Image (cartoon, one colour):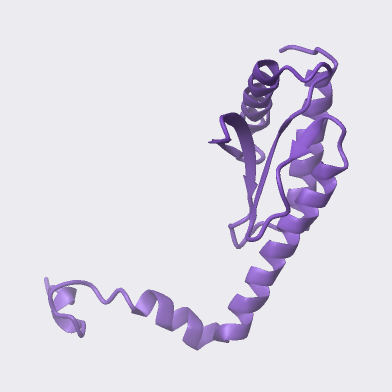
Length: 145
């Protein structure tokens, strides 16, 4: 069996540059630029939709494709809002239609929508936003699982 690493320009390892060169060669830079613009637009859409919800606090307008937010509850108890955000994340991810990640920003538990996958389109982002808003409303009204 031939060792295909012997047939690459680097000889000792696989030809990693071909993974970038070939799609650029086949599709051109414009296709990648258009796809990136679409993902940035989808993040803006998610931001704008979530920012309108009284049960959510969106941290800032996305510069790339990450939209960070947390639950807003009546009374403004930070600990309760962090717990509600963790529960929101659990509920959305349990539906297995979208996967949200989380982090801590300034000590607060924050959920994130990250639009990266090339298959993600407006329909999927709108569905995810609707799911987040539905669960945020349930949590704000005191609904527990």
